[in-house]
Length: 75
Image (cartoon, rainbow, N blue to C red; front, side, top):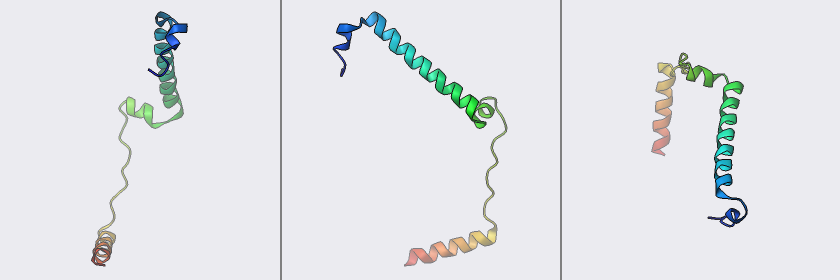
């Protein structure tokens, strides 16, 4: 343990609950910040509708893209 001598100054019966409490408060703060500063997290947690997915390329553009990819792989 990198800070092993810490327990010579702070009793583990005080330090361990303090560390666990600090982690819990920090985690709670992060979750509150995510809920209040984003719009997608509350919708995700409440089972909102899924986000719209961008549509695929039209058939013409897909054909052009596949021929360009094939010609570039031959080089």
